[in-house]
Structures are given as C-alpha cells and as structure tokens.
Amino acid sequence: MPSQGRLNVIRFIGLALFCSVWAAPMIYIVSIALLDPVAEGSFLAQLTLANFQTVLANREFLLALFNSVIIGLASTAIVIVIATPAAYICAVREFPGRTQIEGWILSTRMLPAFVVVVPYFLLFRTAGLQDTLLGLIIMHVIVSLALAFFMLRSFFAELPREVLEAAYMEGAGTFRTLFSVAIPQVRSGMMATAILVFIFSWNELAFAFTLAGGAVKTGPVAIFSFMGFQNVQIGPLMAAATLLVLPIAILLILSQKGLIRGLSFGAIKA
Amino acid sequence: MVHGTSGARKRPPLTLERAAPLVMLAPMVVVLAALTIYPFVANVFYSLHAKDLTQPFNDGFNGGANFMAVVGRASFLHSLTVTAIFVVVSLATQLALGFLVALMLWQPIAGHRLFTTILILPFGLTPVALALAWRLLFNPAGGGINMLLTALGLPSLDWTASPELALPSLIIVDAWQWTPFVVLILLAGLVALPREPFEAAAVEGAGYWQSIVFVALPLLRPLILVVVLFRGIDLFRTFDTFWVVTGGGPGNATETLNMLLYRLAFQNLNFGHASALALVLLAIILVLSQPLMKRLVAKRGA
Picture 1: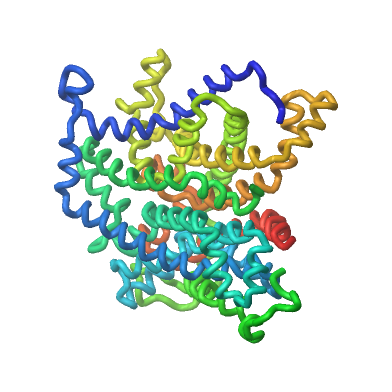
Picture 2: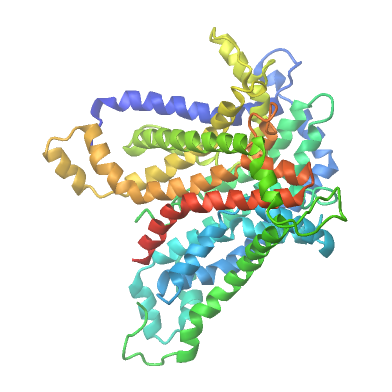
C-alpha cells in the first residue's frame, strides 16, 4: 500500500469537512423537526415534540407508513423467494443460455419507471388494481428483482466449491444443496439483500403516486399532505421526513458490511 | 463444477438435476417477463396508435406520428441536452469526488467508523424526504444555504429559482445523495487490493500518486465499470429529486427526458406520445450501456 505518511492530518481534516457536508442535511431535517423556532433561551429550552405530535395525530400519514411496511415486507418476500434459486443456479452451474439470461435480467434494470408505469396505468384501471395494496406490491417486485438477483448471485459465487461438492457427494441434489448448505452459508448476504429490497420499496415514489395515491398512500406520497396550499408547515414536514428516514437509517447501519459487498456485484473479491 | 464427479454414493435422479436450471430460473424469468415484456410490448403498441386520454374515441393506428411529434418538438432536444449534462457532469463529479474520499479513508485513520457510518446513510434514505429538505435549503429567501453564504460574507444566489442554477442545484443534490455510495464501493475495492503490486511499484521508486494512477486505478477497473454502469442507468432514470426540488422548472430548465415523459403522460394525458418517448429513452439507455454490459457479463462468464 502506498504510504501517505504525514498527510494524515490533512486527510483527517478533509474527511471531517466532507462528512460534515454529508451530515448537514440530515441534521437540518432533525433540527427543524425538534426545535421550536419561536422559543427563546438555551438549546434545551427550544426542544419540542410538538411537530411530532402533529404528525402522529395525522391518521392518514400513520396509515401510509403502515401501508409502506406491508408493501415493503410483501414485495421483499416475493423478491427473495424467486430471486434466490435463480441467483444460485446461475452462480454455481454453467448451462446453455446462462449469459443471455443474465444479460436480459440486467437489461430490465434499465427500464425507466415511466416506461413501465404508462402501460400498467391503463392495465390497472381495467383490472381493478389501481389504488390497491396488491397493485403496488406487484410493482415494487419489479423495482428490485434484478438488483436482488445480482446481489445474491455474487454472494453465492463466493461460496467455496468444495462445500457444495461435498454436499453432492453426500447425495444431496441441487435443491437440497441450496436449502441445507448454500442458504445457511450466505445468510448475512441474504439479509443485506432483503434489507436493500425493502428500502427501495419503502422509498419508491413514481409507482406509488401514479398507480395509487388516493385510497392507498405510501409514506413518500403522504408526506406531501404536510406541504399545504398556502404556507408549508416546515416543522411537521421535517418531523414526517424524520419518521420516514429513521427506520431506513437504522437498517442501513445494521447491514452496512453486507450492503457494500453485495452492491459491488462480486467485483470485489473479499 | 459440482457435476461430473464419479463415485457418488446415492446420486440424485439425473433428470431432475438436468432440469434444475430450468426449474430454478422459471419463477424469476416468468415474473420478470410479465412485469417487463408486457409494458414493453404495450409501449410499442401505444406508440404506434393515437392514445390521447382527452380524446378517448380517437385511438386508431397512426404510424410514426407519435414519434415525429415527440422527437420533432423543440422540447425534446432541450430535454436531451439537459439529460446529457446532468448524467455526464454527475457521473464525473461523483466518480472523482468518490475516489478522492475513498483514498482518504483507505488507510487507518481516527474516526474511520464514524465517517463510514455517515457515508452509508445518504443513498438509502428516502429521496422524497431528503429532496424536501433540499428544497427548503435551496429556498432563495431564507433557505439554509443562502443563510450560510451570507454568514460567510458571500452573495446569496437564486439556486432552484434561477434557470441557470436550477440544474447545478440538482447535480449537487444527486452528488450529495450518491457520492458516499461511490466512496464506500471504491473503498471496499481498495481495501481488497493485493499488496504486492504496490510494493513492487514502491521498489521501483513510484510516489504516492504514481502508484494510485498506475497501480490502483487499473486494478479497480472492473469495479469502476460496475459503478459507471449502475450509476449511469440510475442517473438517466432520476425522477424523485427533480419532481420534488424543481418539478422540471423554472420553465422547463430542468426538464430531463424522464420529466418530459412524466409530463406527456400525466399532465398532457397523451399516452401515445409518452410511449413513443419511453421507447426513445429506453433505446438511448440500452445503446449507451451496451459496451459496459458486454464487458460485465463476459467477465462473469469466466
């Protein structure tokens, strides 16, 4: 490794500067949410939970968060169940057409949301799926199916071949090997993948407000109810933003390592 | 390979083993096909028909009229330019800045844990929530950024309210949200690099920057390829930030192809035009990503 020697101090100052810039908007959100702009006195005297009380009294927003949880959990379950076997077989076995299928899966990630939205908007209207939980669950599967496939594939590809071969020698078929050998070994990678899939569903806006947004709102859609027509109530708005990002922040920090490894899609050989 | 090993005691039924790829891929392929091929085919169909929801009874085949109407309008060229600037400048900024910060974090340093914990957050936090905060921060009258500039004795700027600064503002927001992600990916790549090439370079008298440019960068190429491909695709598709922070404005100053597509579909309700533009946008993304994808998939084949 090249040595930077006495550059350490400059390095530290540079990092502190960059990271404060990155932390600033997050601190801004929380401080607007927690501080009373009118109150005077010390920092502690300005602390208030009034904004959070306003948000928590808004049943529509709470219901939207609940919807987001349901849609997130359901779509994540579907994505993991169907992407896992596909990712496994592509990672461990060579078969005709594998490269083509992977190329096609990758290319589906290039579809801009509105390429999908326009036809589904018309289809959902006739199929009665418009403004339903089920409709959004289906759409959120597409948001991260390809991503989950490539993340899982990279975790399976890192499994030592000897382990899989040993299972085969014991008489386990491909399916048994997947369930009793491979999956337990990549549990943390699967967890990271599932967390990321959930996050992308939780964050998703384009589908959520074009294909639903009336009776069924998700968090990112419902937050606009704090925008108002005349004046934006920035206290409650930022309190709602805090509630929207807080669970995600916790998930991200918990799954840090696996996320980074998975998101490099096997380009990092650990 | 798991297969071809002789001497297994209880070999599972061969037919089932042969069919394993098919069985295991089927659910994924079927679901993905249903969710992507249908919209694609439907887009092709709508793009060739009049499909204006304000004129429901006029829905016949109209040849390439939708494409002509979309590509021919001045706003298409404008949106194409805005998109190109946004994608290229964002990609360059995020890669350069991301690599620089990754280098700073490469070797042990006090506060490493705190720094990486801050960096893991921006890319995953709900874009709508962050975009709303940025909208308040960019507010020309009393927004946080202008207050900071004033405090530093610098002139206030109009940011999202000015046609010239609106796009740079959005580039800043996207760089804020995604550069940390690039940092962490490149950092993970740097940490996993073998030591020997650097030691060899040091023996030959290479300085710090020389060993970065001639040793680290070439070794990181596959990873940089992954970042460029996925970041590039997502930059083309960026919607939330634009919709919340500028809504494509002021005027149409920040109307990317994606925002134009949204306007054609959900404000003009002309789904024929929207479908035609959707296909054009998809074609642009596919053509541009083709060379990168080829290398990526070919590499995996090994």
